[in-house]
Length: 67
Image 1 (cartoon, rainbow, N blue to C red):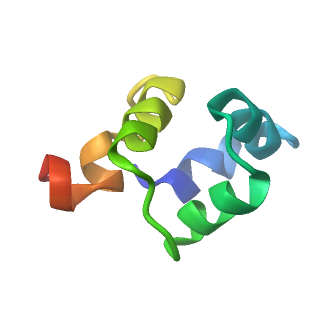
Image 2 (tube, one colour; image 1 turned 135 degrees about the vertical axis):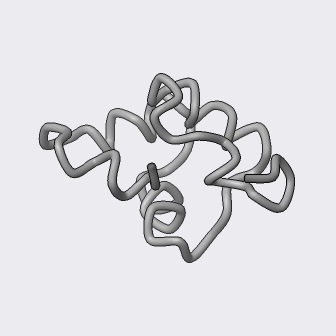
């Protein structure tokens, strides 16, 4: 699942809550969701953990973790 797909059924404010929990700005998270930026390997793992592995680190960083 892509990060954008994860938010389809999430309540309002879930993007802001995720950004706060991960210690990043909402803008940075939005750029990652849009596919305009890639998260660091550490952030990719943190996102995967936050989403309970619904969004896999391999999807976020296939160049590092492989698909």
